[in-house]
Length: 162
Image 1 (cartoon, one colour):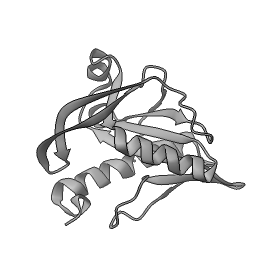
Image 2 (cartoon, rainbow, N blue to C red):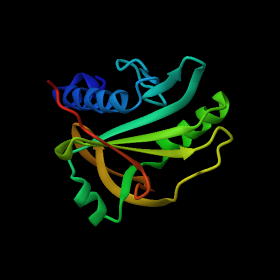
Image 3 (cartoon, rainbow, N blue to C red):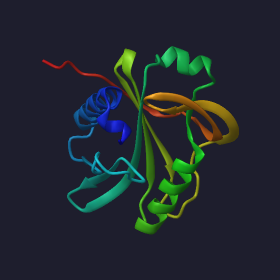
Image 4 (cartoon, one colour):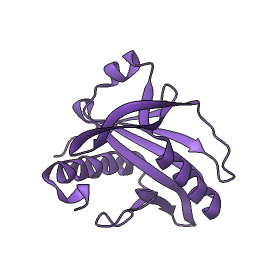
């Protein structure tokens, strides 16, 4: 079963939808077109405006405050393999790769341009082999992880659901 179909997976999907709502509030002319959630995909979405595709997006939601992220040096942990594959796809499409990090407790979306359409990294990324949670449903695994510096990320604050 895909992780997204589990109760915890559904919770992360709801969090991603909230992140998208915040993004659209701050960027009304850009559409976040998600990839199918019932299938494994290299990226979570494409960004589209009236001229066409303008970027690819990897989105993660974390139960972490912005203050706590800063205490960790402002680094967002994500698997390096995921970033490598997403960057390769962005090169194939000729568009930038963006990282969306939604911090659930603060209702804040951080957006960072990870690479341009040629694959050039635009943000500091530290790669290290570390033990982390395997999936949204738990477990642990040792793998190459990327620690993306989010200190200069664009901060988009949440808006009321009313």
